[in-house]
Amino acid sequence: MKFLLIGLIFIHFAEAGDLPAKNFWLCLQKRATGFAVRTLRLHHFPEEDRYMMIYTRQGQDQVKCQGTRRSVCEKALNKIKADLEKNLWECKSFQNVRVFYPHYTDIKY
Image 1 (cartoon, rainbow, N blue to C red):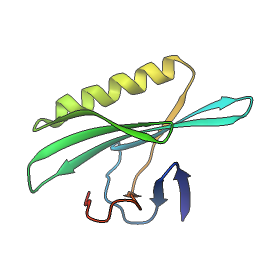
Image 2 (tube, rainbow, N blue to C red; image 1 turned 180 degrees about the vertical axis):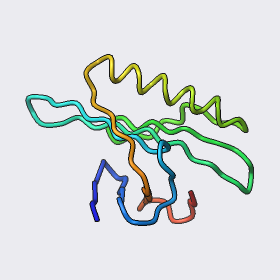
Image 3 (tube, rainbow, N blue to C red; image 1 turned 135 degrees about the horizontal axis):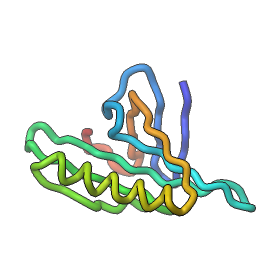
Image 4 (cartoon, helix red, strand yellow; image 1 turned 90 degrees about the vertical axis):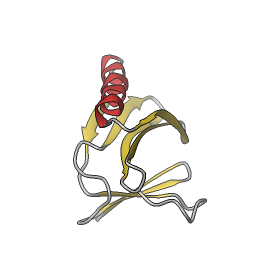
């Protein structure tokens, strides 16, 4: 099991998770003072049949896309990922990721 703490978001890499492959990307950039971290997450809310793409930068979540068409949010995710990679960020997709928000107890993904 692996764990990663990003700001107030706790990410657990486990055997079973809520986000399938290609729905969670972790991007790192090596700097003189350490590493900078960004995350890209594509969530599906089946009860509402809606998708949301969240980009985390400096510990702050930003909703970059939401709607009923997965392809639109995937396109937004891929554009941000491509922009990061052009600027020497290394991005990797993870499977079986569960994202915990300790400051919210009623959010289900």
